[in-house]
Image (cartoon, rainbow, N blue to C red):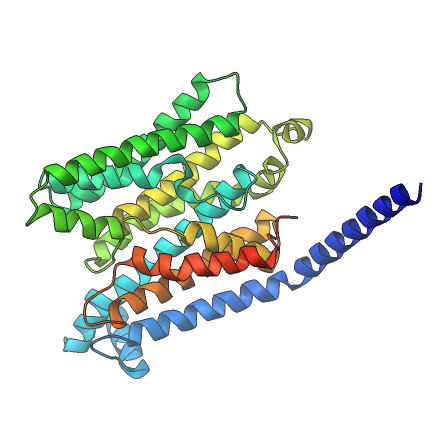
Length: 359
């Protein structure tokens, strides 16, 4: 009797602690999100100023004012800022925010904080499309279009397989189908690397697969931004339903939410965002895994707060990574290398703390 009473008391204490923690996170979340927004703006200004050709804050403000009023001086600083530095900064924020938001959506969908945006093979499919474009010697635009189409096609195939297998848990089937299709795409990438010209095509393939924003220009940012926005809007509009979906299919149906239809919308939106930015930046890992996990520790699992926090933190983190990539060494370091070097130990530290922030 004493033992049973003790167990009940322990469960009650844990439940009270969880509610207190959730209440504390709820109260401080607006301040945290506002602080993250200020941090992101400050980092954007710093990243715009830092580089092989440093720019002062005065130069940045004067150039931006001249561009808005049509009185640009045409000096070298104008070219560096408007044609190279600013598009790259905006692209880094866009890529990081999209991957982090997609990761947060997938983690809620699969009810697992260890899920990343490429769980259904979108990165592998996009990589296969880009590698095929390089192998066929297509233009940059053609390579990006194939990468975008490959990412969408891979996830579409995974979803079709998930619908065909009906005697299993839907979420488990999607994950397993994603692993299988992603592995097949990886095998196709390896085959194309073997067949590619080792002096021209192979280096380009390897560099693209490691991720980079070195060749990003304004046109690519403006072409990817509407697609990211199109994927973000459904996540914003359905944010409370995504909270319900994270409880499980049966609980969602009991609350009047059609789990299958909502799952399709979330997958389509997150895949659109991921494929759009992977087509621009290449395969960049860890952001969609680490950033939502850290955001959940700061603001809790409620998707209303988690989504904006993930967007802001993802943009800031990707901006930091890209700034290091172009300044830390004489040659540019691929983004995927830095995200792995920084993200893997940091994630191990998060796991060692024993707090996943899921409840």
